[in-house]
View (cartoon, rainbow, N blue to C red):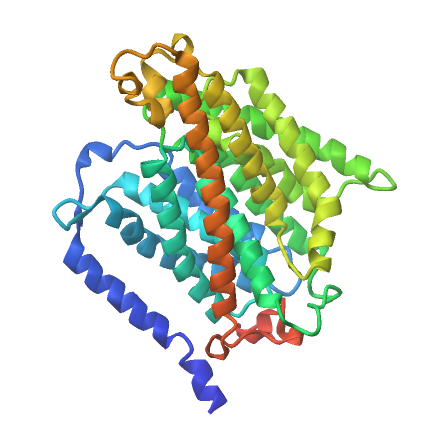
Length: 428
C-alpha cells in the first residue's frame, strides 16, 4: 500500500497541471508585440533556474533535491503566477501574455524559491508544492496591493519578492515546528556542506551576482531609468562583496573566511538596493548601501541564525540574512529617498519613478505648492508597502505552514531530513 502511494504521490499535481492547461485554453491569449523588447528576461530566467538552483546544492546529501526541486517549483509557479498576477489586470476576461508578463512570472517565482531556501531539507516535496501554490496566491495579492493600491515604488522587488519570500518562509518554518515536544535536530550531520557541494553552490552565487543587474532593471520604464538601476545594482553588489569578505574574516576567531558568507552575503547588495535602484541615490550612495548590506548579512549569519534555530525557526539557507533583513533595509531606504526626491532632480521622471506622485498635481486640485508634502505621500506609500508586505507574509506563512503539517502531505521525520534518498533514485 505504501509503495502504491509513493508512486501516486504527484497525481494531485498532475490534476492541477491539467486544470492550468484548461484555464490557459479558456482565458489566455498572446499579447501585444510592443513588449517584445523588454529588458532583463533572459538574465532573470538564468537566475531562477541556474542561480537559485545551484545555490541550493550546498548540503552534502541534498544536491539532487536542491537543484531538482528548484526546477520543479519554478516551472509550476511560473504557470500559476502568470494567471494569479494577471487576474488583477484582465481585459474583457482575457489574459494577454507578453514577454513582460513572462518576466514578471519569473520574478514571482523567485519569491517562492526564497521560501524554499528557508525550508530546504526540512519539508517533504508534497509540502513544498502545497506551500508554493498557496504562497503564490498570497504573494500576487501582496504585489497587487502595494503596487496598484498603495503605489509603492519597488522596481527591484526588495519588498514584494525578497522580504515577502523570506518572512513567509520563516513564518512557515515556525508554524511547522510549533507544538512539537522535541525541537528540530539542529545537529543533524546532513545539515552541513562538504568541499565539493560548497563549490557547486558557488556556481549559483556567481550566476546570481552576474545577472542581478538584469533582475533589478528588468521592469524599468526608460533607458535612463534602466541605466541607473544597472549602475546602482552593480556598485552595491561590488561593495557588498568586498565588505562581506572583510567582515567574514573579522567575525572568525582565527581571521579565516566562511564560504557561507561568500555564497550569500556577497549578493545582499543586490537585494538592499532593489527598491531604490532606479532612483537618484548617487554612485557613492549605491556603494554605501552595499557596505551596509554586507555588514547586515554577515552579522546575521554569525549571530542571528543560531538564535533563530534555538527558537525552532529553521532557516537552512539563511534567507533572513540574504533576503529578509536586506529587503527591510531597502524598504527603509526607499522611504528616505522618496521623501528627499525633488522635481528638480527627476524632471519628467518624477511621476514614473514614484507612482504615488504620478498625479501629484491633483493632490491639492492644482499644481503642487509644497514639494515636500508631495514627496511625503510617496514616503508614506513606501512605509505602507513595507508594513503590508511583512504582515501578509508572516500571517500567510503561519497559516500555510500550519496547514502543511496535515498528514496527507507526508511531513518528513527527523532522520529523513536533508536526505535525497527519500525522493530520488541515487547512483549505486
